[in-house]
Image (cartoon, rainbow, N blue to C red; front, side):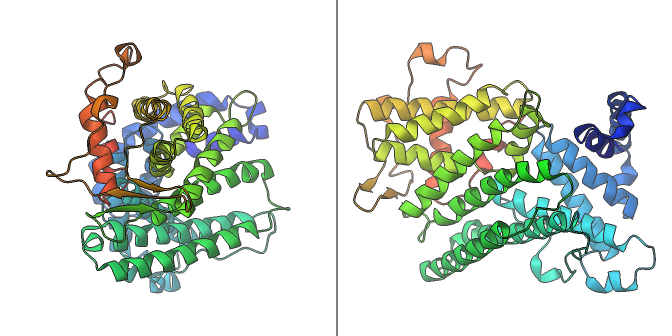
Length: 423
């Protein structure tokens, strides 16, 4: 009910003229929070409980609680498996009249599962070899068709994200031979390009809520370029180091530029607030493009890259007070951008071997015998640390650990957000 009321408010439904939708939404949220505390929700498989869990994931992600959200996704998918929602035969036998709703619930949780797997570095709860359920059927209604096409594209992108983690970032993937990893990278890049082609050629001219569809297109840009950056930066030989190509840098740059465009579409008299966007960005985009441009800015002594990083940080600054997660994201990105400017202005390019002609960067692997150090650049001036609320220690050890794991091919964001996300 809370989600329906929120949609009515966003789309300025005529019900708002008869009822106080904000007050009803607040009451629905209080009732929903009480319902989440029941033991039955997490332990008893039922359509109603899966529906409640899926709604809870949407709500809790917006409250910067990714660990709790992941626990709910796992519980929801466990219910789905117990009831056979991952198998097509279940829908063929279903006489309830809710088969399409069950199918959408399963695939929604699937998308959450695969996206979280890649961004936070955990194996998926459900594996593709277990699933043969079909995607939701595309309706004939031209006003609804684009939304279902987008939903199917979301599932396909999530499937690619799951493969990127399984084949390139999981424990087994990191131990795979270099030739196998290279083949997977090339195959998945092809899949990503095909996905993008289909997105670009989707006809949304007759869609219902065209303004929301238009706004969502920039979000798809972020997810596409962010995922592509994670894929292209995957090292062929983990532990030895990481090689970043001009294609990787370009994807990362386009991801950050898409973020700036998306952020400008929120706030003021617009349909959604800037806080709505930051909530979404915390859980659906990756930190990897920011790190890639951070390293490139230093290696190439690029003030243009530094300015791009600072523009992104400015967007986070304006919404840093919405929750602890947004504040943490701002602090981390602000630290990296300040360090990038200081190193570029001092002409310190000690991040690896940069080939200016080909725009490629090789960063050596990090180990106890060959640690990652920032010498005097690691400590920022005391006046810049003022007001960081205890982040002075993070500027050295934690930031170095994040980069060291990232360079060695560890999952893109597992350490960064596991440290403390307000839970």
